Amino acid sequence: MVDYQFVTERLAIGGSIGTGENMRELARAGITHVVNMQKEFDDSLLTDGSGIEILWNGCEDDFLPKPA
Image (spheres, rainbow, N blue to C red):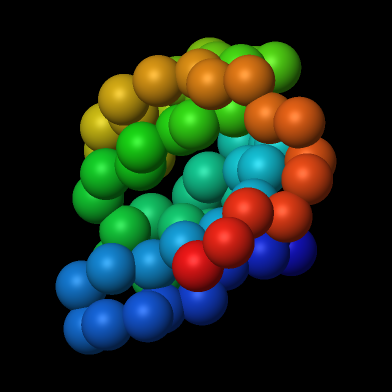
């Protein structure tokens, strides 16, 4: 099960997709596009006919909290 939650009717946020089945789960939930910010893995390798478009914009993450 992929970790995501809708923050508006049209925008969801979440963590790593990780598997093709998770990508298909997102497609079934109505997600059509993903902006992938993790540098470690390009999720476009998982699309496998799901119809989801991926923009991979990998960024370094120091895992430290940032002020709001």
